[in-house]
Amino acid sequence: MAGELPRGYFKPLAKIIGPLAIWMAAGWAAYPYLIVKISNAIGETVDAAEVELFSYITAPAFLIAGILLTIYGFTGKEVSDEEITNLGPREWPCPHCLKPQLADNEICDNCGRYMRK
Image (cartoon, rainbow, N blue to C red; front, side):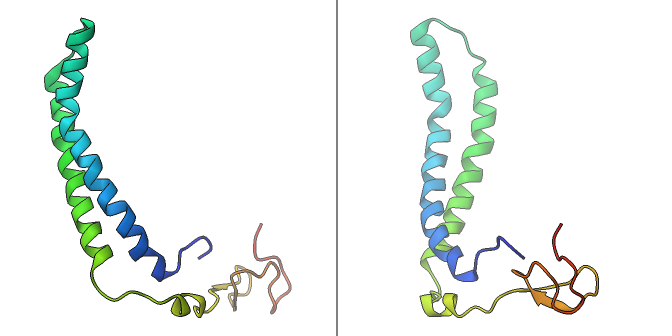
């Protein structure tokens, strides 16, 4: 499928996104406190229960996702650059004759019709 990342890209992405998600969980946990402090400082009123409810749902979700991504990213076997570059080109069936074609082909080698619109 066009636009898919090779399998070796997911571990490095998890190494970056996992800790960021944990950082976001910390931010969402502090959010209700900060909103109340800011609203009191400027003389506004805020429905703290509504802000807290959203924070109580969002912070654990980011924390769980961050922990899982971090564990996945920093454990297990790394895929080497050579394995990534040696991945074969993906094939698609032609929408007209259903014969396998390289995903980058614009015209089917078998029937000669355009693969994409």
